[in-house]
Amino acid sequence: MHAIDCIVSAPGKAILHGEHAVVHGKVALAVSLNLRTFLRLQATSTSKVCINLPNINTFLSWDVSALQHLLQDKTIDHGNLKELDADLVRRLREFTGIEDGSTDTRSMAVSAFLYIYFSVFSKSKALPSLTVTVWSELPTGAGLGSSAAYCVCVAAALLSTQGAVSCPLGPDGDTARWSGEELEMINQWAFQGERIIHGNPSGVDNAVSTWGSILRYHAGKITPLQRVPTLRILLTNTQVPRSTKTLVAGVKDKINKFPSVLNPVLESVDAVSCMCEQTLMEMAKGSPTAEHYATLEELMDINQHHLNVMGVGHPSLDTLCTVTLRRGLHSKLTGAGGGGCGITLLRPDTDNAVVQSTIQDLKDTGYECWETNIGVPGIQLHSPHSIKEEVMNVFNSY
Ligand SMILES: Nc1ncnc2c1ncn2[C@@H]1O[C@H](COP(=O)(O)OP(=O)(O)O)[C@@H](O)[C@H]1O
Ligand SMILES: C[C@@](O)(CCOP(=O)(O)O)CC(=O)O
Ligand SMILES: [Mg+2]
Image 1 (spheres, rainbow, N blue to C red):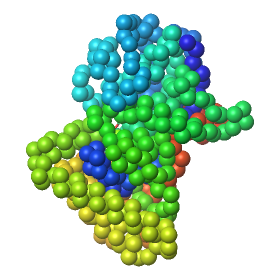
Image 2 (image 1 turned 60 degrees about the vertical axis):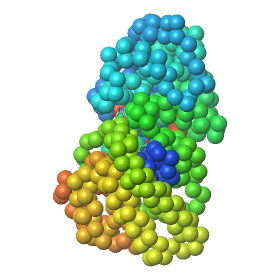
Image 3 (image 1 turned 30 degrees about the horizontal axis):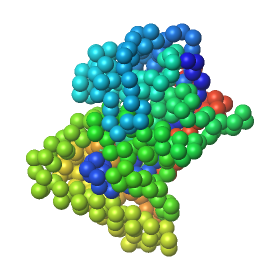
């Protein structure tokens, strides 16, 4: 089979409320971020599948014939996106030598790519020869959904090149989006990749990366928030590395150990998400008041305490909260926690001098910090001339 060239990009996300609780069926609110992952797929005639992942210093290739061998006598149930195909996972492990439960960056990225590649192309007569290069503006493993943006890009590019979804870019178009039905398919395949990387993902990250904007996510149900006030958010990366898979597993262990203690905490997080949603809707209807912002700030403080109770806090995140509170600003971790990133809510009238001093305080602590834009579009298809020079330069160096 001959693949078709394409370039796609998908955004990262910040979870306003509900991380971890969402894995256990509670409500989460999440927003897309203006930091994107870009993927270029090139059809080749080298009889090889090559992946270039410069963010994680991984450059690998396999002979298509060896990959074809792995699929021998294997039937893949394409309709079953409810769970991972355990036999395919086992074959992949044997082929790559990656151990079960591995949480190292390279193993997870390679396994997720190969899993989606095999599943998508196993229907085709022959596996295609191609080169995939992925480069991201997102920090990897820092709570901003880089794994989901990666999986959404891989799923969209492979499904497009296979023909399972269209290539909606016209001859003169710069960027294009897929139909709702096609996005649903991309999202489901990306979720399979997230299962490899997160172990037991809720699906909120891949949903935001696929659809973009601001979403309420509850037990697989995705509801875009129609009207929200403009939110100003400061993002801080504590630079403390952590693994989502390990943190998610740790919360599950705690719930199993102390169900009567942890279940009410999850219920309370659910209430925080719902109250935040309600407040945002009220703010969008009329003119937002200082009281509305005070409520949003208090909810952030409460949820940060919940997350500490779940065991996903970190001294670096405590420092973030303390440093920002000295300037009157409220913060919480975002994503899986254990280090990684936090968000700080700014009011529309927060003085620029206060913002700049806070950013400086956090930089002095050794953190990266910047004001971000939220609510950007989800997965997109790009023409090569619409891609930023910086990204094209990365692509062209492989
Ligand atoms: N640009 C990228 N290139 C290759 N792998 C990536 C990229 N972005 C994310 N990943 C994969 O996702 C993993 C990080 O996922 P995770 O621990 O869920 O953190 P987060 O999603 O918060 O960034 C990395 O270890 C890697 O396997
Ligand atoms: C902790 C969790 O709620 C979000 C994880 O986000 P991230 O991988 O840390 O960006 C897990 C999930 O929803 O699958
Ligand atoms: Mg992730």
